[in-house]
Image (cartoon, rainbow, N blue to C red):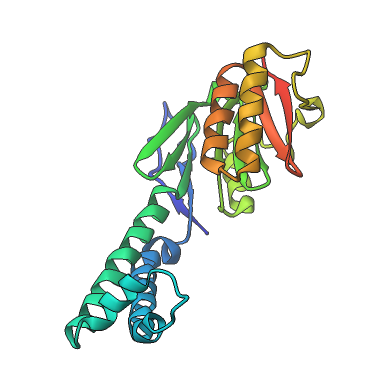
Length: 241
């Protein structure tokens, strides 16, 4: 991980320069190296499959025999060249997916920017009541405890903490509302029918290990003023506002 200093602000009325923006991002080696490492690994993997294609095609129980027979039937050098090219393309695709999921945090005196891929979320300083890490997620809450942002993060937590603290943001070592969560049970009487239906749908998604659907439902619940956290495959909730 690496801090990348931003541009310094100009002197404000002779009162001295404001702190420069601080950007916390993955190390340059990871950001740039993935565009080299992923294609190389992809090419190597597909080349190995090409080398084993003839052997696999001879196994009566092996699946996708038609694919392996086709791969083995292409003569060299074009068979090997084609395998390497396909592997390179697949590797570049993985590198692109990684880039689209990579979080970069920029902390300025007046706002925080959370950038993921080509999208960016800006949160004004006066809309932030607390910032903390909840396991592998960076969480930003407003003063009432409502969620402003929750982003998966592999960034160095010490650098994140330093960036927020140095700019005067309310960094917390843990969720200040952790004690306000309750275990969700089916048809919880405290919750409206619509919320219970969303919670039930999310529980089904968790059981199926459908992380994408669970994340979508969590966002919808947050829009209804219900925050959800998962512990040992169980859902806990709290109302905001």
